[in-house]
Image (cartoon, rainbow, N blue to C red):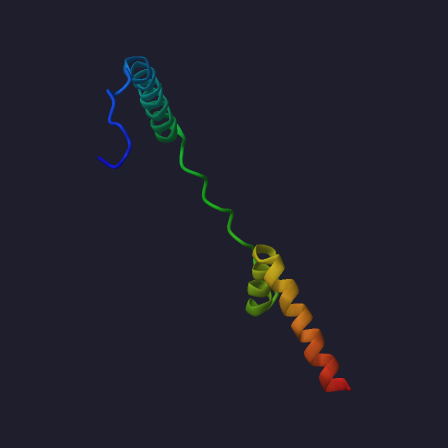
Length: 88
């Protein structure tokens, strides 16, 4: 032995019963979530984009800025630093 006495294991029937009840509730909730997910209709198709006369690259830039505002801010700062070095 390693110095620790190996005594009899304590009774776990109360804890085991509680865990069984929790697992049963969890299974019921998982079934509900799965059923609710199946009942939700698929999202509608996005509305077609009307051509506004803007160039393609400007539309892509607009989407990028809208989806990645932090990266866009970092890019603007880099462009300003480079522009200030070129103009000085």
